[in-house]
Length: 139
Image 1 (cartoon, rainbow, N blue to C red):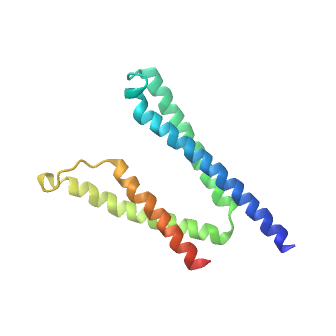
Image 2 (image 1 turned 30 degrees about the vertical axis):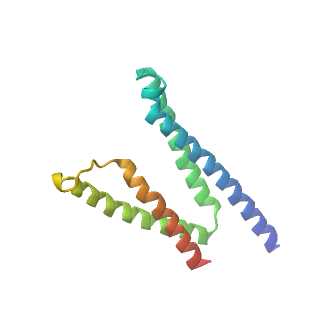
């Protein structure tokens, strides 16, 4: 009986992972379209840009809902690992983001322009590394 429940959980988690990957991919595609489309594809046409914005918001909402559904599909230990990793990532991003913004006020000391995309390059690896460490720690 226990293996039947484990098989159901595994199937549910696998399906949830696929859905999350699909919606995350959709959001990434609409983000790229919004980033590059106005200049490269439709010569800054306002109507097409507004459509791209709406598509990005819709894809982002679908990705968020898929993430919540995924969180509800995994077992308690999986939730704990996910939430712990999310908390670590949030903390790192808050500390890094504030520091990053303050460094930009230093003017000539550091010659760079802060961009939100730089924060993503900290956020992604932080979450992945904390998930890896937590998985090893708890499993």
